[in-house]
Length: 104
Length: 171
Image (cartoon, rainbow over all chains, first blue to last red; front, side, top):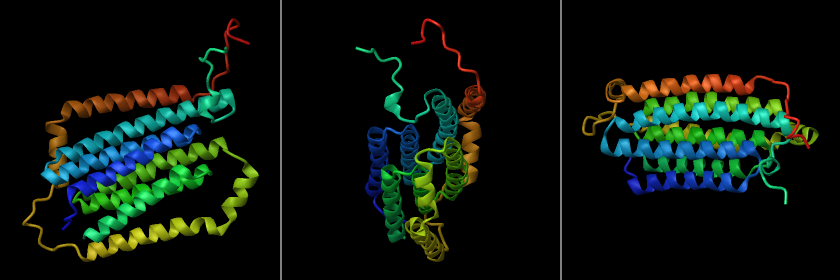
């Protein structure tokens, strides 16, 4: 039986979330940015599972299934967008895609 | 049981750090798969075996394979250098050791698993399914519509079209 205090479990989810956030902020390769978003999704799901296990309710697992669905759709659309961007700009650098920026 | 949680958490955090700091996209994706497997061990320890299976099958199995396919299609980075790195066997040692640690973690946790869990009520997959299709029925239908939109959007975006630029926008 797991007797780790729930604070430690939430701490794990928080660490994973902030690692994803750091990756999203630091990396400029757009595939790495999408991966970091996945890490953040996963840690949010982990929080739901922790809460559902703490209060013995099925709602947490239900919410994780929804998060899984959203993550799948997000990855499909995001990777299709990345393919299109790569075909247009021949690079995956997020800073290179600045057509909307004013050229001063 | 607690030590298994801490081991899985340490593996998850370490492999996530390796995933976001890696230079090679494929290596980072493999570390990310390892991180997802570690999180699924945490799910198992949190009395959610169904969710742990879903995490392995859908997250690590389907979504990450999609990532790897696209990364290989785009042929990212310096191909010669990455190929040289891929064939180097030392690249596989750390992920293999971490995966082995996770496996022994799971095996030992299975061995020490309590036989009588009547004292604490577990949320079973049956309850999850009943709740999913009664309380959250509307959300399930919305998720179905969203999946449909995702399929159509991915097909539309993924189709190769000729690049058409308006003549006023060309420069």
